[in-house]
Amino acid sequence: MANKSSTKLKPVIALQGDSFLVEERVKDLTLQIEKEAGKDISKQSCSLSETTIESVFVQARTLPFLATAQIFYLSDCHKLKKADLESLQTYLENPASFSFLIFKLNDDDKADAVLKALKTGGAEMIVLEDHQSRSIAGRFIQEKLSRAGKKMDPRALQALDAQWKDAPEMLDTMLERLILFAGSEDVITLRMVEMFEENWAQTDAFKLTDALAAKNTAQALKCLNEIIDENTQDVLSLMGLLHWQFRRLWQAKVMLERGVSQNETFSKCRVSPRQSSFFLRHLKNFTRSQLEKALDGLFDLDWGIKTGRAEGPSALESWVVRVTNF
Image (cartoon, helix red, strand yellow):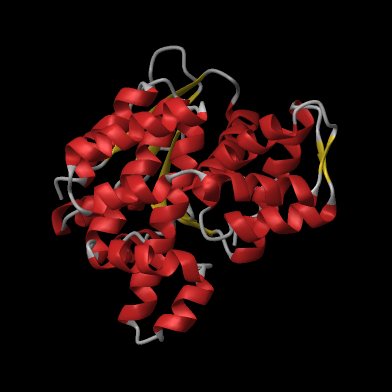
């Protein structure tokens, strides 16, 4: 496991873990590279589903004008084919010293062959284990609270940890909403976290999920707009609620497929008795693959809105249309 302190980084890095935490670790790596190579660094993000790995290698061997180094952030690594892996192995034999290639691998990436090629070729392997992930998330929480002029008592932090540990990619959204929910109060308490969760649960999201599960596009869009209007919630807050719902459905689907009893599954997924009939109906109307696509879409949407590449309401409407047409 690489140390992010004074150890000089290798020019090819494999970084694996939860997508949100990977992005946070990428920020650390970028700062370290800037310390080593200077501030005049060229940076590119490349999806290997859209860009060939060979074209990345060609660019990596030529330093841009006036740049002291360059970084390539590479995602969708599971798309690499056998010929791509052979090119990767060739590049690893003599990588450009002024170019840093960061392969971003999520926990659920089916990229065993890529990992093997990177490891065999001597790339720097960074796997975010549970305690390291929590360290990164803890620092992120404290930095965000500090910028907002807030603090969080230990019991509230523990409750928040229980919420985000199954969905770290939504931690930023959850914190943003909690900070607003706290209003003028300086300290976020356990009661605030509990009330925040209760308010989410009281929102008529089951009606929307019902329409999504029934593949009723018109009804789903109507419910979506009603929830936004009636509860005066912004899109990110509503997305957090939808992610919570679909994450529970996915988790239940996985558990039931593994033979876990329905009662134990509902207990683990925190499904109350009054919700059970609705939850079970929703569960039966989605396949595991459809739930995974829905969650991936929400994460991409969340990232797109925060980076200015997607407009909130219209982008969420597009997601609703896709989910109802799986």
